[in-house]
Length: 184
Image 1 (cartoon, one colour):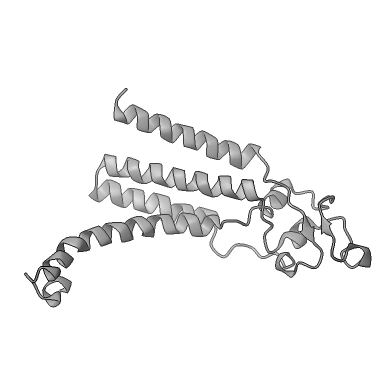
Image 2 (cartoon, helix red, strand yellow):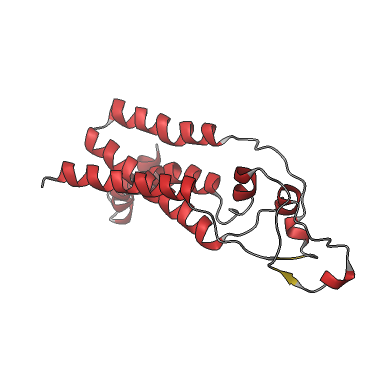
């Protein structure tokens, strides 16, 4: 089997896993403390949509790599992107950390104003919000998918920039050039 076939199989594997996790698996159902203020914020729509993040971190870099680079570099970027996406989604589902707006979205059938629930970790509850996807999303706080995906592109760029600086830095260190020769 050649490298191209292996790469396609690996990419297909990660795509299938990511889609399966996202659409067919639920995050672990965590309980909560009624006095936990960190999950009692109001729900607000996203300022930057998932579509915008995906376009800016997948489509634009892929176009740039394809235009200025090679197919090999494009495949490596895409594969790294898929692995990053897999790790992010897997972690979200494995931890089931409640988002800051969990109570507002879930609307649990527990009266947290009732003194009998003070200092009690609530695990037996039902969300009164019948929107499955909203409640599922409210259980996926850790770690931020937006941050994870958005930092994948700059991380690669910073690494490339760093490796690009090494030859110039060695010229300064071995006294062949002044810093201003390398920096400008």
